[in-house]
Image (cartoon, rainbow, N blue to C red; front, side):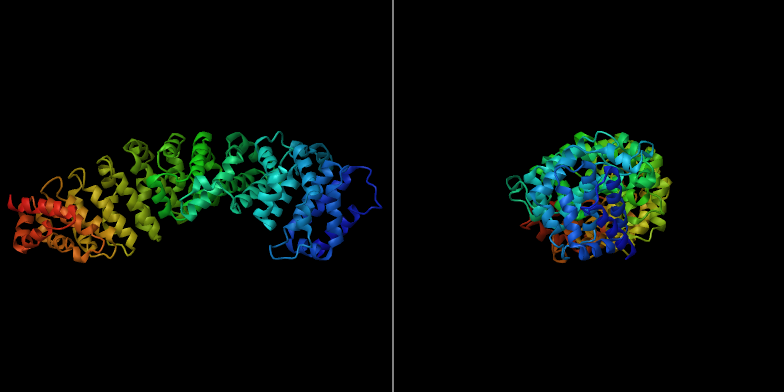
Length: 596
């Protein structure tokens, strides 16, 4: 109430027709001071809006007055933005927002954006050793943010677009000429304006997005706004090393320093994620899209722009400066980009030091939140899966003990599942990692995870064990302990888990007969026979994998003896006649080897 009373009184004095300001910086001081008070208390702003209809109208008049000093206009814009910040969408705005969307107000904001007045603002607030407390564009950017927040896309795509204000905002973000243009707080208002605009975007390139599902259409519309407005370049420039260094040197009390850097990177990462997450709102959807391409013309343009502008290297370089919560936001974006097909973002990530030992260890620290760890594991997993060329860099990062600790101590099943998936992809292309994984005790922990209480962890553990047995028999001594868990996983309700387990059991004798007696003795062969029956497999995938694995184990006498005694040959003859070509092929393979 005190904030509201003081701010209202100050504004009544400032807008009084009976006062002639001899120096415009004094009037500007009043507006900026009132705005500061109102920003601290949204309730006070709402109260002034409710009780001061005439005052709000006077402020609007001051804003549109043609002969008014641009610094005064900027101060008035700051005050109006602060007042609107106390307004929620359903709140009665007394027509304030509507009036500010009309041509006179738009023209006044255009004037300030086109020709700011840092000199008068500097005189009003002091030089602050070259660091402006308020930039000459702060007020208008903040006001436009609040108008888009309250009015939505009707304002952004309507009045802002037709008046040229939207294009001017985007252009000004790319051409900031000095420290007096935007303070850190003003920059944050501008980025929030962009976020609001992109989130409420409802107009896009329907031709380019035709035939796509709703999420992809929405993602393409939002990408179109960013690409066509040249926003991508402006956003990436904001996290350029030089811009971050300037921001870091800016006094924290003026919105700069470490907090300013973190706030800026958080906002940039958030806006860049909007179209990507709209197109693939879940990680599963992201992986599905990545399996093909970044679908839609505008999303593809966005992807190309981010590659060309070096968004990934710039994010990687700034990571050491960020606090944990901001790192989380940045790593989410990095993981989504690295997941995209083509491999360009993956290459940029590695080349820019994303796998540097110190950085990677900090990202995998067990004290981090599970989300950050999981997204870091996704990046590593996608790199390992994408190409064996990254194996050397992953090995050099020496994260083995961190992976072991995550398997042993993480209470989050998502993290355990991600580590198992990573191990599987590290063993995807060759046996390069077999020795270090064994030496660091990771294989033994993955075996334990095959009996984990979490179904996803069991699924990925089976995947990892299958690949750990695929390329050579080097790990067979250790992998013998996994047979019991793999047999149990053949009865899982999830088809993919059954498939992974069946494949892993077959791989245990892919490279030598060493474990054939163990497979026969533990009834693994019997379990595979049961799992190969299509009537227990609605999808038909895991039964085919089990049948293929039987074709592998039957090459060795102990397993062949079990198969012959089981009476399985009769069923094989039926399976050979199956309408499914794959089943016929695999059944024939088993039958031929049984008779051979």
